[in-house]
Image (cartoon, rainbow, N blue to C red; front, top):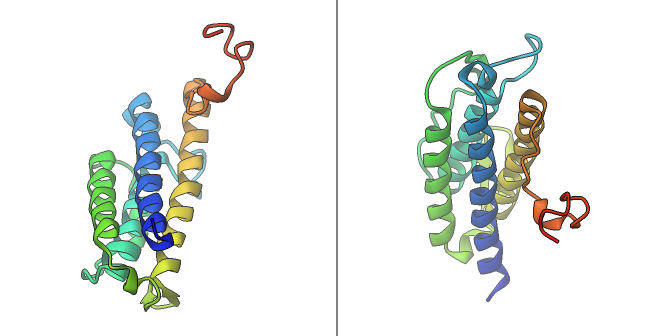
Length: 169
């Protein structure tokens, strides 16, 4: 497998994996918890999900894929309740993963201007999105653990039998 193929496959797989973690988290939260903020300058889990959908759409679907960019970034953070954020995020990630799977390797070195300020290669744009998605997924996981008190067990398979309470010796 070429490095280009591996990069595109891994990027799509990582976005899909992180989306699954966000879906797990949001499923454990009440609607009130999804939109809860500690202070006016903080983001709720719902805002982060909207923000990720906007970022993936703008950088991958528009910046890499050429779709029209209609992003309203401020609205992602201003929302206080609303739509099914999981559905919106899921459909956006599905579109992005399909685009990455079909992307010709020759496009990776092409330059794009994204958000009017960032002059990047297609490879850099994809890398940015995966890194950005990962960072905000970590915030959503932390918020979910804080709000529910649950161990989400995303890495339970790495724990020793003792750490697992000898459940799986």
